[in-house]
Length: 546
Ligand code: GLN
Image (tube, helix red, strand yellow):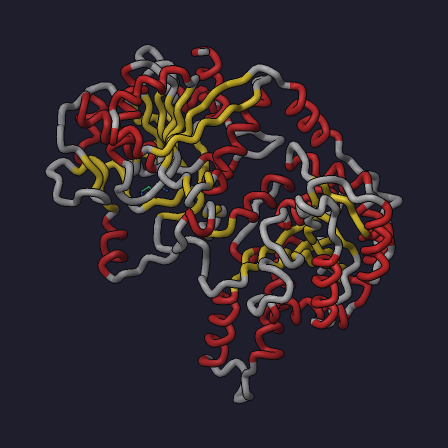
């Protein structure tokens, strides 16, 4: 087995300052130098996964190929590195404790007293090593969630400290810290960073690199100050000002020689590993040159938290739209609309005409659903390109059943189980799980195959007979209605290999330029350097409309 090198990325005293993007960017740089890189996210909460959390609280749930429901940072890793990760790359406090308790119950500790320290950090280390072996990585990047000084992530920091003390040259530390510029003072403040660095010291960790996040670039005076008070070399202070695009970040880090600094700490021979950033740079350049705009209305239910718009909930969808827009030489202009407004005032539907396309992403529960169904009807009747993802596909089927098949009470069992026409129904195995209140990690999750029918929009986009896409749902198109729906013109262009589950619904191009929904989540497979064919097809028709 290869010997692995480890880079731990921690926060400072503030969260939400781009630690995930910083970790992803370090990964992208090391990959561009020809290393095999894998990434691990540690979320210090008790939850076993992100699947049971409210999206307005936690943001997007990113689904991995093996069905793990994880944090949105895992999506950033996959997109920045163009890799697919698995369950072992994602860790929570709950997972670590559960495994330790399982081993204890199985007598695997052979009668010894099992203790929080060192047994919890040992299990953390075991997982990090397992993920590294599985990926056969040269470098493993581990992002420790949360902020420095909080109680929750201490045992993960302790694991990192133990790894460093065991193999000094194999472990490096990067701290991502924010430097505020209070508006009344107008001066960039380094104290929170100094404080965070000292707090790390008290956990036995000396950081090697500080990524200094701020609104503007760092000046030399502050670089020197941080170096002096945080005990690192001046070149270890990387200026990371706010940028127009997150995809600039790896390029900017390399301008400050980040890989060389980490290479020195980890004793890596970089001379034989020139940086191959070509395709990434081309992608970033193109994203800046595009001028023409395509306007897409994203209509969902998880947009607002108090006064703030929460676009993070659909981050993979938004990124997927960007990649395909760039490929088509356009800039994406998104308009987030809460679906409830269309319930309260049907006249508002007319406003949808001004958009080039409408997208309804995944969702759960009944709030705003009638509004979404009216939107889909409007898109169908007015030939506005429509793309529905998961719930967006199920609602497409309900709309079609209500207004074309004339089943006025068509519905999904998720909203009204007593409706006579459940065109979307619960999957039989799911019924049992819900009866047992078995909610966590129990949906139809992860990658499944679908067989495409030739001559359809789906086939013409993928140009493949069999595809594989990631899922996260409990409900499905009810087999009892499939024939009736087909007879009234709905096309099921993608089905599970056994023909039972409907994976894609669409209308023929003769009837509508683009009216298509997927039971799966295509957004999880869109990558900057490999835009997703369905997003591209949707935007192509949106651009043609405009
Ligand atoms: N609520 C629907 C289901 O569970 C759709 C889920 C989704 O959009 N991810 O089937």
